[in-house]
Image (cartoon, rainbow, N blue to C red; front, side, top):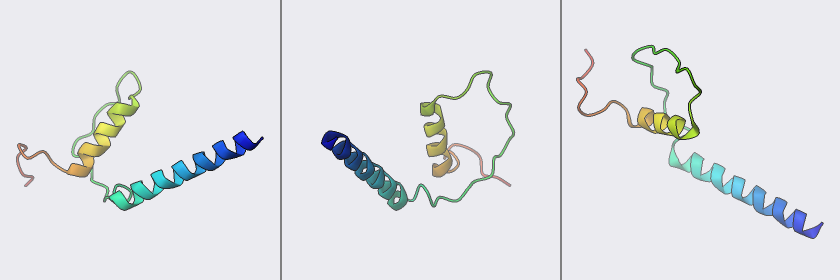
Length: 70
């Protein structure tokens, strides 16, 4: 019983720390960017790693080598 309570307290503390890091990093407050072109969804679902990389790329904005929008 005591070990389960300790585990629950540690879990709650870890989740609060994660939420604090996310909030202070600015990721949660990043403005939404419009999608430039519509793409068809892939045949399979996206992996978590792919979704994370897509979100990181969206926060960074357009690629420096891409031409400026008119």
